[in-house]
Amino acid sequence: TDRHILVTWIPKSSPKPYRYLVTLSQFGTVAELKEGLIELLERDLTPTDITLAEVYLNRIYMIHSNENCVRYVNDTRSTVYAFERVILEVTAADAKPPDTTAVLSGPVVSEDTNVFTNNLD
Image (cartoon, rainbow, N blue to C red; front, side):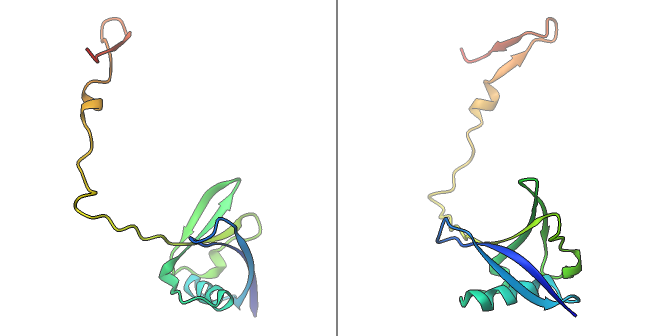
């Protein structure tokens, strides 16, 4: 028996989302769902290039791994999104330690009076 899942595709190269109806076995995996989407997209992608998530009430409710069965993908109450992953390369010159001075000199609560004071002097 087949299952039809409406997937909203969010590519990294375009701000516009697209919707695709993916058909696969009801006993399939999330990786197979992604492969079906890739066939419809006609793009050179792999399932690891895509993150599949359920969005419920405008919040990401669940992120599915490739090994999950599609029977656990709830497309009746949630909207299924497929995000193309973006890989950011960070060079050693870009990487710098976090600025801890703001943490060390931020507002302090006095234990005696429970009054916030600004310790930036």
